[in-house]
Length: 411
Ligand SMILES: Cc1ncc(COP(=O)(O)O)c(C=O)c1O
Image (cartoon, rainbow, N blue to C red; front, side):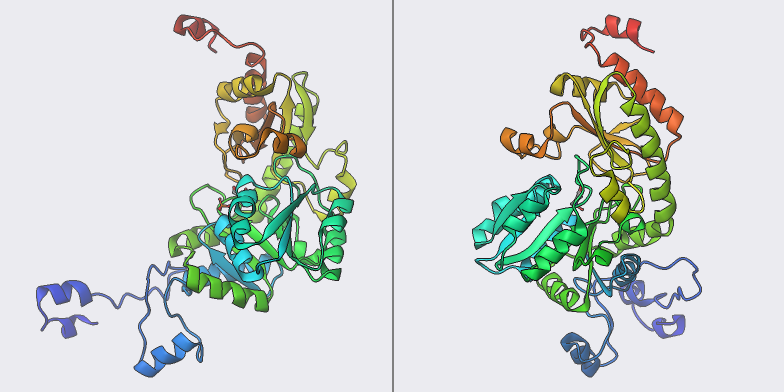
């Protein structure tokens, strides 16, 4: 509404309607559509948009221009025809369950997946008569033995987090499709920069988009990229369940994607240098990183990945005590359970991200108490090595918790 038109109105009316004609048409940086609703040209226009007879935004629970722009950008990177964003990665995984499962279906899922994903199946989906079967991601026979005609979908993370085990994407996809099951790959760890699961036949790719896609740990978001048919199913779930992404977070990821390749390549290069250094360190028992030629599945990883990512894990002798002492001595590397940030971060999977697993489940997944996971950021590698080196040295024996003692032994 222009100034002349508002002059005849009262203060409250002008406070609301004056100055709303601001155009962002020439802004080079894409604007954020912070709106819940949309203006319709006429009653007919509203009716047509609500029923889907004509395109256009309806309500930001399921249509928003900034969210759509982000969805299109991720879909393009994953070489998918459609993309649907959600409030979080878990929201995206829940939506996939809602879109694809019916009672008496089963889900076949890799055993060492992100802990909360496992919890969706173990605690919630079973209440609706959908049971999950958990298999080692790197065991082709286990996949073959567990996928059947009632399998709604197969869900896997490759490489797995935190053990860096690799799933043979082509093999598993062929098995699943022969039995009518869809294949969904959680590609959060490698991002489309280093792995494009749809090229190997996967039906959908899911991301916790607040990780590498955001790149600076500012938002929580999820996205599924897939074909049009599944995309429409997912949009129906989104419209009904309301697990929608805020335009602000969509914009952060939209802009974060512009530097994704640079950041992911740099993190992967640094992770390789750190993995090599750790493999030669006297305090480290084992390093898990697919980029090392000593990794059992290095050849498979080289076939389906174009790089090995910024996450690695390693084992220290001495169990939880030793791992915690090491973590507590770090000065530059942050204690944070996130991945994909510009800052390097360390976590102890057994007591944090995977704490809801039983000791037996942890053992079966190979997650030892001495295991530490590192998400390598964008700092200079010599600085990271110096920090990890001093923390490893100091973790050998614990210092008594006496301030005078800590002062003497402080740097
Ligand atoms: C590999 C992976 N998948 C899914 C999720 C869940 O995503 P969100 O935290 O966005 O719900 C995470 C979260 O850390 C993750 O690391």
